[in-house]
Amino acid sequence: MDIFLDHIAIAVKNLEESVKNFETLGLKFSDEREVVESQKVKTAFAPLDTHAHLELLEPTSEESTIAKFIEKKGEGIHHFCLRVKDVKKTQAELEAKGMKLIYDEPFIGAGNCLVNFIHPKSMNGCLVEISQKLED
Ligand code: ZN
Image 1 (tube, rainbow, N blue to C red):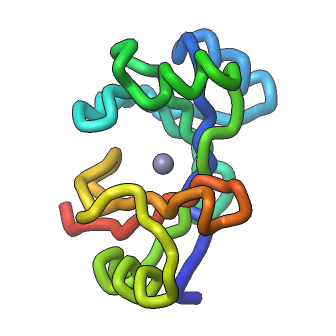
Image 2: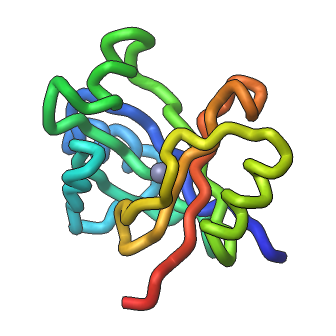
């Protein structure tokens, strides 16, 4: 398949408490915590299946879009992410079809991935991330 589910991201107020909470389901989170400066979030990942992960996102600043999301809607599912082969190419194809992307250019997200987001207005109200794994 050219496209598959990479992760589902949940906005949380307290990362470590949320890790413990989701581990009650039997999920095992990596000990690594990555701060994505551009998004002002701290992340924790747990594998769900062969490709997909659960990602917990805690804002590191009140300016973070995740902080604003929690303020407006409370904690909960923030976006899901599809892994694609080439983010720039996918973005160009989507834009050619009239879809709106949040950022003009893809940027480096968590886990050394090149990412962008499709605007919820173009995706039935869902914030959808597209992501391409860069070579480490
Ligand atoms: Zn994501």
